[in-house]
Image (cartoon, rainbow, N blue to C red):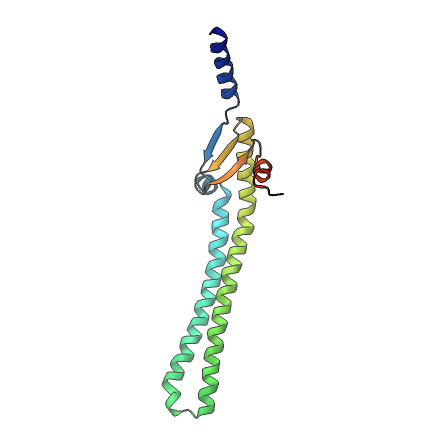
Length: 164
């Protein structure tokens, strides 16, 4: 009986020693509190305002063209009507293309400006994980695994499923 109790204590202590230490971090909060974030936001706002101002200028030109067409259309010959309709359609296409390009440009700039901050935050999280013996650290703002220090069982799972 004594050996049985000692065995249970040994097994229990072994299981506790092998227990994984989990942690979590609010990545959005960390990112928003980084001093560099103000500069990033300022650059994004400046770029977005310039693009928005240009789009509004294009929209103003479009509205002027449509207003002129609606006002003058009854007096114009068919050739002028067709030309003006084509010009209006071209302006619509130009605005749509500009808006798509502007959105991509803002997204690309945001990515370029945030990448160094994300890398810096990730490195800090990994350092905290290593220093404090965390096996896993999860980002509670997104549900993403930020630090993985435990054993990767992916190969075992793949083998079990017969995936090579």
